[in-house]
Image (cartoon, rainbow, N blue to C red):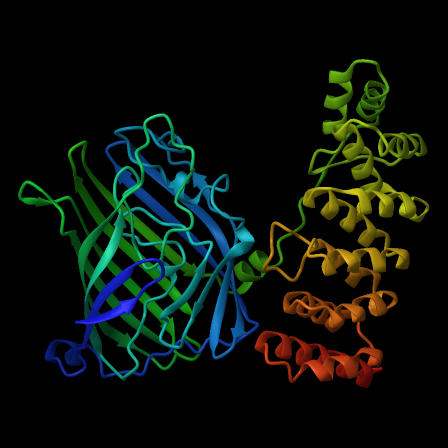
Length: 509
């Protein structure tokens, strides 16, 4: 047996190809399977996960947008989108969280109230689909594995008509009963399960997997994947946890995109505290045509406009002596998804509130100016940006300055990137509100962004390259070309890409 290093765990794995096995050969001739996913391509999938147990039937569904980018010799896939409960007639929505003796709901694993931000789910793979890095993954109930790893099936390096894998995997023990996992779980429900939640444990399980190529056309390859698992730990004569899955996978042969992943599974748990069985299913389905376009370019949400009479009342409350009424009015005026007509009286009140000692009122004034202010208010917004102590306020102000496209904001915004404050909650993103604001300002911001290429941190320089890719002129080409030889591969590639974009714009003009 061969020892492999896992992410957070050690896994013992043995794999044997079955290309010459009679049963597999009868089904299909050996194929060379590869995930040759092209960089900078985006697809959309419908994802549905269903769990049926003693507590009833529960379904989570959503549309996930999957994008690729090159990461050295590998491919990084990012997953964006949200899963939401799907109401089933006769089955009330299961409560999120942990309830002693009851199964954890799917909402606990996939609900938008828990786990990492939806923008931060990412998986890096090689051409066989082997997972090299995971970020923001969510465990799923046994035996569905996890959200990201359910998307792909690892394939052998050689041409084959089928293969088998015999390995030891790790499961989350009760109360969550999730996995199997290829990495230390990064999101598996709420972290505040008290009272009554024991420390979460993992258990070792023996898993056997058989995969056969059951059909192929010039466009697709169809795989049938069957797995069984049971824990080494037993309760009496029975395994503590057992499970099985039957999965149909349809792959695009040209690029390796899954067109369909359809999994049916069963699990059983027999512990000192419970006896439980579940039937589960998971389905990834590639969207095409009009459905795909609708998922990739959804219509913007229509904001709810606050009637003028309500705005007037809120403004009156903001100037009252009742502190509670003032704070309530401030929160309602700046509620996400609501708009109002920015009257001169409202903007004058916003200017007054932006300097208030009360944090809620001050934030309301600054938000109103960011959303509805004019270039006349840019100095106030810049002062607020300099004094802001939290990332959320900085991002609100940055969006406002980007909306106004005022060149006076270029240097202060670039200084935020240099200081590492462009978006503290999304460190790995390049498309932060600060970067987006500089892009909206356009070429007048070029000098401020160009200065970032001299910063020490590679991530700062990469962000600068991504902005210059959009707004740079021939003025930036010399500095960018110098960075194309940088030993940090991601930086050199970002600089080269920015230079190519600028040269294309210069040539077109």
